[in-house]
Image 1 (cartoon, each protein chain N blue to C red):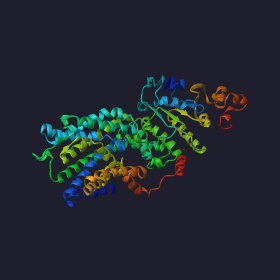
Image 2 (cartoon, one colour):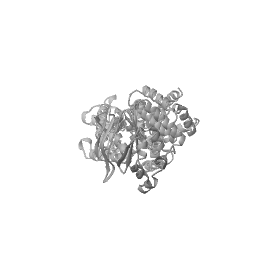
Image 3 (cartoon, rainbow over the protein chains, first blue to last red):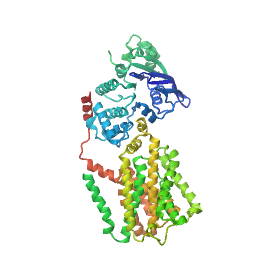
Image 4 (cartoon, rainbow over the protein chains, first blue to last red):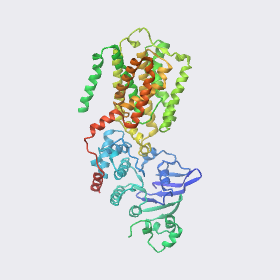
Amino acid sequence: MLLDARGVTKAFGSFKAVDAASVTLEQGDILGLIGPNGAGKSTFFNCLTGDLALTSGQVLFEDHDITELLPEARARLGLARTFQVPQTFEGMTVLENVMIGAFLRTPHRAEAEARARSVLERVGMMRLADAPARSLGTPGRKRLEIARALATEPKVLLLDEAMAGLTQREVQLAIDLVRDIHRSGITLVIVEHIMEVIMSLASRVMVFHQGKEIARGSPREVTSDPAVIAAYLGTRAAKAAAGHTPIELMGGPAT
Amino acid sequence: MRRTLWLLIALALVVAYPLVFTTPFQQRLGALVLLYAIAASAWNIVGGYAGQISVGHVVFFGSGAYAAMGAYAHFALSPLIGIPAGIVFAVLIAAVIGGPTLRLSGHYFSMATIAVAELARLIVTNTEYLGAAVGLSGPTVPRNVFDMSFISALPYYYLFLAILIITLGITWWMTSSRMGFYLRAIKDSERAARSLGAPASRTKLYAYMLSAGLTSVAGALYAMIFGFVDPESGLGILISVKILIMAALGGAGLLFGPFVGAAILVPLEEISNSLLGGKGAGLTFVVYGAIIVLIARFQPGGILALINRLWAKRRAKPTEESISKEASHAS
């Protein structure tokens, strides 16, 4: 088992943002975390990456307890992430941004640069290597986040709404990129609002509502789960919606 | 190539300066510019590259100054012997106070460093061994050349130049290493840097210790050229402020920024002091305040960043369009 989170609870004061959530991740999975706004999926995500300290629970990575490890130590073990709001290193070029990731596996500048260039090649940003990162727009920044994370040579990549704010076409390109990453043998966890993305990528889905896991299963199972529909639309709407294709109601494509 | 050429020209000008401007005032002015350039360049490592605005660097400056004068006053040794002692002391202080304070972010870090600096000044003012409020003096009549007590500013000038070059060399070496990359990343987003495996706390602490050691050398040199140190000249908070403003004015986070800042501010201060005499001292600080406001409002990157930007303006910026085109090629 690659990643194993057991009874993860994160409380802010008396408010439990995540309440006893557990998840396991096998090599080759693409796990989707979904849920309405404020459901706790980002908090759970940040507990996995070490950005937030757990109130209780345990996180294991390749059977090692990493609950107490700092984010940088988790990165070293092979856990990489992107940020919902891109945390671009504004003062650097695109290439240098990626080199920061590459430096995790080599202390040598030339080597880091070579690795960063090959990652840029892979994500299709080679031509922008020497551009200042601050000149990138949202799609470029989102892609750069992924490139930087890939440069750390992760085993697990956690994408936090990597496609929010992209146009339909850009989302399609990003999905292709994620598929390509998955094919290269990296296990993925994606937090996403866009149902289309979850439906086309995730092998398993976990649904959060008010800090608790309310459903899990394949994307199709989960989207037809009455509890999930109720969480998104309210119980009354869920009853009224009986008979409609649920995914349609949740903003997905009418397939 | 072109950059190397410009550097050589600049170096030649700096080397030739005291031979062209030969009055004692001009030579001394040159030496002071170099001295402050060393201090500001040392500050730049942690304040500029790592973005940790220390206002307490005078503690390290004072370590060097007191170590140099102490070596003479207590052990009748050359003040030069005080330099390594000052470095060791400054680095130790940095390690001790850096641990807890570097966790603080932004203004809180700055305020903590001010507190440490004031504390150090008060302790020293009340410590008889360090001369209390009177301070320590260097050799009035030099026994030999190692007492570093010269009437002419010329020997100081070239000594300071050599040390400035070493300081800039170390800075350059650091910025082109992994540590320098990590520092710049931490400055922009510590959280992202950590997520990519940069050990943020340790990297900041190392930078702080390196900066402290180099700052203490500047302090030792300062005590040598003035021949004494007291709590005000060695540990006064305004020295920290001066160093910080020089780096910020010239361009914090740029290799030659602090030197440019020192070359502008030191003459300004010396000339206003000599024109206005005792009355001018207050005016200098008014000028500093005005400079802080102007930099913060109009040119946060400093003068050198402005020049670099004008220089690079010809280059076309990549547009949103070219990025999505790029992206579509990729898939």
